[in-house]
Amino acid sequence: MALPVNQAPELSDAAFATWQDIIEERIGLQLPEQRRSFLKTCLSIRMREVGFDDYLAYYNHICDGDTGLIEWNRLMDRLTVQETRFFRDPVAFSLVKDHLQNRLKLSSAPLSLWSVGCSSGEEAYSLGITAQELLSSTPEANATRYGVTGTDISREALSLANAGSYSPRRLESIDSSLTGRYFTQQGHKYQIVQSVKDRTCFVRLNLLQLAGSPLKNLDVIYCQNVLIYFRKWRRKDIVTELADRLAPGGLLVLGLGDMVDWSHPELTRVPGEHVLAYFKRK
Image (cartoon, rainbow, N blue to C red):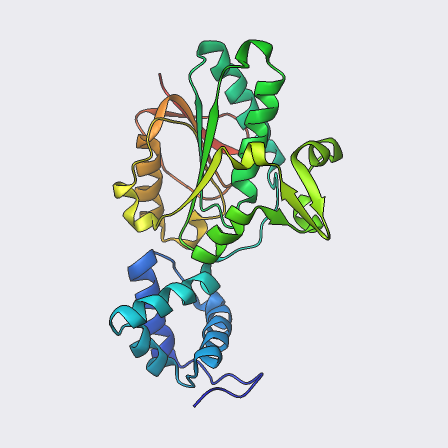
């Protein structure tokens, strides 16, 4: 029996613990008590859509073979899609720009950038705009290419990223001159230009399976607003894996507060209290 509209049953302690366990086991996402209401809302909405009125019955359904796996992926889209915007952290993007500028002085090899937990694509396209702006304003680097990879666990988010169409609110942090150069208005939305879109690809990736990713030798790895949902020990494992995928001299950008008491023998922290980033020693 489906749930009545606007009515959700209470999520018992036992049911909450059961859902906490499977979500953390499968994707590493930690849902503390403070996010209980969030989980209840996501579950109840999806349960209503597929005709369940009991959290444990729905749990058994998503554990049931291929059909359950398909439903699990749809549920994860609800749990993991997050709203973001272009150039959300100006200080971090300024650091990326300076780093790429220095990198171009040393080599004309293609620039390789990775947006980890890219959500609906704003962060990845922001990296692409940063690279394209720099290359177009550096005559000696005209022949240099760049590529951006955005990864996320949510298929729904990746679909939005591939579409590259955004509401004006997502562009609030962008200078109007950049908006004019890198977006075309289509009705009430703004479409990322094809030149940036062509150099940006989006791939589904579960961070618990990071070791199997082919990405390596990155000039920039940008990972913000992702690690806060993982346990501290798992964050360290993920960041260590990311660090190993940097090219010599590469830049790793994290979110403020993502990591405490973490170090890597090949990385040096970038000075400054407004950004958490590391350079890989050459």
